[in-house]
Length: 508
Image (cartoon, rainbow, N blue to C red; front, top):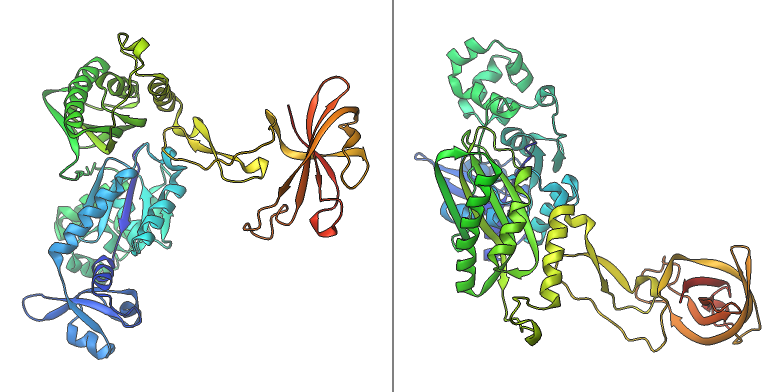
């Protein structure tokens, strides 16, 4: 199922100029241009629009509405370049991104949402990225570019997710301007009582085509998915990529594998010359009907080994629907890193192996490629003394270093999901337990070592249960030789340190 994201950035020109010129955010800001007859508003920020200023309005009228209006010259060439750069920044989401007019970006996110936690999470991350850049916008995802474009600009929410296969009636309440038609056409439709898409959809098609030409019905059919609308992606000029076009369309897995081998060899040679390795590759299949399909693979470390990358891509081609045939294939390295030298193990130099780390990264890449990134993870240490928070999950193919704090005391090989209360016989304040009962089983303590005092983390929110607690841990061994990790909540002397309850936390 095709899924298209439309990102609308109506304030990009004014937000860019406000940052560049360090202008006051309290005064409304607009840009001006000349339409051949007079000065008009090219773009307006939210404060100006709130006071009735809109793009296309005569500048003199806008200044009459807002006397303290800040006015700067429009820079359409720079705005287009900024939009293209933003489209390139969206490659983390999908290999198919392209500017949509002068104020939007299209992203073909088909098959990519599961890599980012689902469609809602993916769109939320996109808006968060914009916020970090000081930009604002609206975003929508739907089955077609036309539907996503309409919902981003005319929907009710800043973030809209239209379910796959939604009925055509979902668009009936939108204005006809959402069809990407000329302003005079939209005005005429309103005068005829056809100001909503539902009215246009229900009207006879032949009179509409005679009166307004073919574009109106073409836009309607593109929105509803009756007519295909391809997205021509753009890539950064310095990106490593290779493309093969075919005289006759291909559609078989064997043909795809042959092309993959040629593309990977070319890309890896370019990466090797640059001293880089691929971390993410996107293979795009350009079909004869003008649409595209793509697969994405990632690696746990920078790689420019053709055999490894070719195998990863070949394992994904069965998920590609070739339709009536593929007329071209393109391989792009959308994320790359410097590839440092690897020291070979002298005992393996003749075997072609590069050591345990490299072998493990190959295994991780293949597992992630087959099972999905959400099902393969690694544990990374966290800088904390609280045992249940000393590790956290990270995607196996994501680079990142955690902290590690040394512990003089041994740690159990298994922690319980949460400490479980036990009944303990012990002398206070600093004597070890003589016996404890856990899950109705009594254990006589033969040996004990401790206590090890662990304090709560004062920098965490006060709502955390262990924020103001003191834990005193004991390693105890029962008469059957089993070893347990117990702790008392509190130091045994001060009421503020804890309620003196005992808990079992792990096993040795």
